[in-house]
Length: 411
Image (cartoon, rainbow, N blue to C red; front, side, top):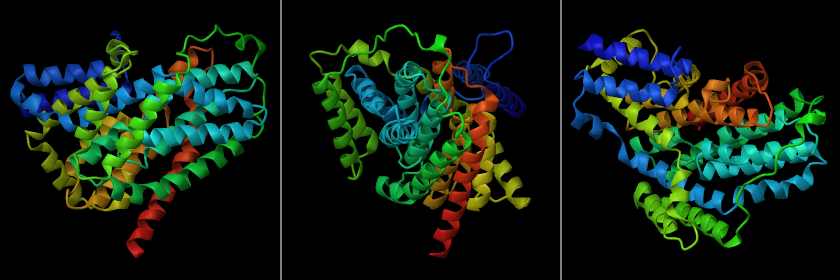
């Protein structure tokens, strides 16, 4: 049975790394789901244990934040936020900075995937109409969203998992993770300006500018204020002793009680695929854990001098795995090896897995969201184009993190 579990696990994670199965229309979520089904069907894990393996608190927190984001999206807030910035399009370097600041800030309060999903179409269309080269701005959106999301427990799916499983304090997490995230953000902006110094002002081809009129929701001040108020109240509740998932789901429930927005409309904007990916991976990892292999693996790794308790080594391992499997699957696997009594390991994993997402396209789901949506506007961001800036930004961010770890060790 051990070899059966190991085979299913290996095939599942290989499929996730590749992102597809040749000859089949399967994406990463479908592959993970099939892996979970295989674990249950083969008897590697019982149905009861499979259900129990899903970290409900993480799923509830993720779901609730998606509801709040849907409120803002339907209220036209995201569209209005970007459109207000278009007054700076005549000064592209300032527009780049402001758009990155807004996306990074909102990603710290809501999941970065959600921000990229909402901002990419509006940003792409605005840039094309202004006859600007959209590529550096869209790459800046993905990079800033990833870096900004690293600062808080609720910034991205893997941080939510780390925060819930590690039982981390919201304020302590913010205090430790925000400084390296802010420094990394400033460095990433400078690097984008440097690498695109000759391309930032380049006009887009004439035939790309004529796009169909948008069908995004019109700005509704009241609905947008409700969403912003929900975020404000939620963040304040996170500083209390109330379980985060309960605070979040309560706020989400209040938002669903609307006289203007149908619950169906709101629920349609929930990223059910991401939620399903989480659930499936929980089952796959739990089935693997029942064999005792993770414990043996940890012992073998430690015997060879690769101690994940060493924060610098953890940074390297998490970076490599995040770019093989993507940061969410990598995080779900790596949390099995962390010490629950040492929060620094959890903070380090959160920052390193998120920073690593900027390295190459498959490192973060946020990258894929931006690239796939941009393609709908005729904007092609290839693997090498992304890596051109993603690699130096990631190296800089990881150096900042390494320095922060060393600084904390001294003081």
